Image 1: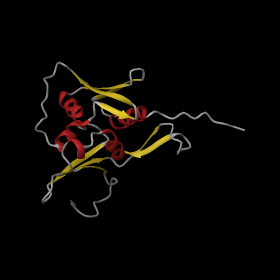
Image 2 (image 1 turned 90 degrees about the vertical axis):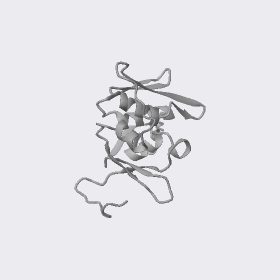
Image 3 (image 1 turned 135 degrees about the vertical axis):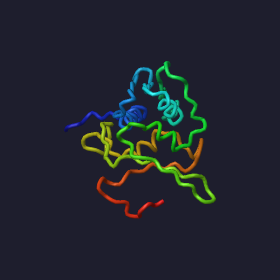
Image 4 (image 1 turned 120 degrees about the vertical axis):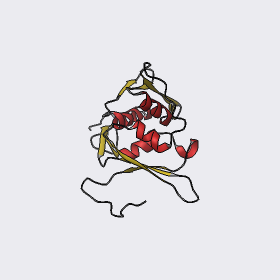
Length: 181
């Protein structure tokens, strides 16, 4: 009888893998994970981008009885940036400036409601090893929009409501409903 050794990635390692998938191609960001301290640091070259990420990402990612500490670090040579008056759209546009996984954002003012903000990512399937028992190779296969839902602060509980993550239409296709919304 053949028995495989199965080991599952802890949730904090999955979170770090998702951070790497979303920000690993950004030329302004370097991600360093310390397995012993269960800490991840995002070294960001631009102060404004760092401030936006510091606002959008949780400082601690809780997973059961454990947690991962998330720290955003930027050059002390630059001035501190105050994004307190920035809209959610502006925060995401700043955080993803120059990141090739990001397409665009769009805010829509709704009658009798808060503003709805769509954060749109490239139309690309993402795959990384994650000890996934549902996959013959152990990979997690997903989209950038799903990763964003998992790693960013839930705005419905702590801030402006109406943030939706989505995937851009394929290159060469037209928007079937025109300029909706």
